[in-house]
Amino acid sequence: MFNPIADLRRTEPLMDRFGRRISYLRVSVTDRCDFRCLYCMPQAMAFLPKRDLLTLEELDRLATAFVRRGVRRLRITGGEPLVRRNVMALFRSLSRHLRSGMLDELTLTTNGSQLERFAAELADCGVRRINVSLDTRDTGKFRSLTRGGELTDVLAGIDAARRAGLSVKINTVALQGINEDEIESLIAWSHGEGFGITLIEVMPLGDVGCNRTAHFLPLSTVRQRLARHLTLVDLPDRTGGPARYVQVVETGGRLGFITPLTHNFCEGCNRVRVTCDGVLFTCLGQADSTDLRAVLRSSPEDSALHAAIDLAIASKPKGHDFVVDRLRDGPALPRHMSATGG
Ligand code: SAM
Ligand code: SF4
Image (cartoon, rainbow, N blue to C red; front, side, top):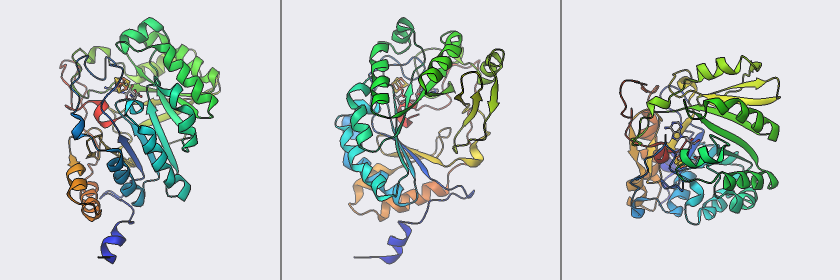
């Protein structure tokens, strides 16, 4: 039966108790991946049983509930989102929110391995910008860092994206002893190709079976090193996330720094994340979570879902508690980045 109060709640914008408006949702559509990046997951990663994953229809229903509550930007991530079977059906159906004007942006974070196949269709679904992760342009290093990935596939994917008219941003995790000597040339290459590039500090998320802290490279150090050869001019651009941007005068390109271990962005945080099994995380750096899958599956009607979302947003933490403890090798949080998505 029509319930005017419940219906009103369904379109009320999501706002947390600190007055932060939630306008950005990242949805992980799979925890699986065709790579095994050293800092992200162990070689023998234990993936979720398929029955635990939200179906594509459930993912659409969940994302749509958030869009109705004021989410304007939606990023599809993973694991590797493009290895999820029939994932384009999800993009296709979510694109209706772009056409209706309820959504400003539908985007994707990908490792690029399958991009050659999907770039044109993504563009056709209204995707305009994508993030492609690339930590090295050295074929051998790429293979060992991703434990088996092929650089040529990723470069072909990036090329296909460009041909399809997608704007590409490169994401690079800065890793001590692995790619620290290549960062300047990655910036030059990205900017030469007309791509933005963002450097990311490695985060202690999930056990990866090796000493990740040994590869932790503070971006403050990277920035100091870059400043020896490049002129970096701070830009005012803020996205509600942990990224800070500069203009590189010599290349004319934009360079981002993501330092998730600092607290300097939490006050403007506008985002939440849902894992591929329907768990809502309101902070990347906190363990607090809400199981939306159970709620979704309990009823075909959305009132309980909206109530659960309201409750979770009301307790969104003020900030995160990441600790980079170089003496301790264990993760700060047990879940992997591939579960919550980047
Ligand atoms: N597979 C896709 C990719 O690699 O772009 C999407 C998911 S991946 C988890 C998203 C981003 O998170 C990538 O840019 C990746 O480099 C980054 N990432 C993964 N594990 C990380 C960690 N422990 N610390 C910092 N960034 C990490
Ligand atoms: Fe896969 Fe992305 Fe994690 Fe690499 S960073 S293992 S590509 S999910």
